[in-house]
Length: 265
Image (cartoon, rainbow, N blue to C red):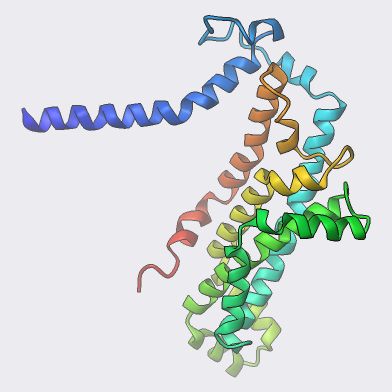
């Protein structure tokens, strides 16, 4: 009897937690299905009047579609550059001990600084370079946050890789570039997947830098979502989740291995 009671309590707590976390997503979904006049109805309706996606197409006007395109451009370039440079720098730190202990720690210390602390100097710099309201300005600021994280993550993954494998490849005649390309990168693919996903999520969801450095031309989706409570806002909010879900599903087979890489000796 005690076991039954404890199981019931446990499952009730789990169901409450699931409902608590998924209710905002459900609320966005039903709001996106309502006509604009029903969004602010009181008492609110917890079921959509009809299942239709016509409002999504209505919401994808020029401004909304433009913001989604801007987010894709900024996030894609930031993620690719951060991952490539992170792999190269992380491998150099792990295998050639460049800078000893202090340089990798200095790279990580950049990530420790709150991004908002650098927003005024960055704004003044971008204003001086005439890069305000450009993709490049937001990409550079995103790289200042994602690149140190990618370098530190990839350094840890490369350190956990047995060096004897690379020594055997050297004996077989592989160059340093071939060892990196044919051995090190494939063996750390789960770690690369985790690093890529984290960089993608940060750049896609980043708000402060985009708010300060954008005006009209390069407004990303996170800024477009600040337009208040409306059906189109709910449509955009749901649309903003889709790329992260797709990216997570594509990299799913690597994520668990990447997150636990090096945890078991």
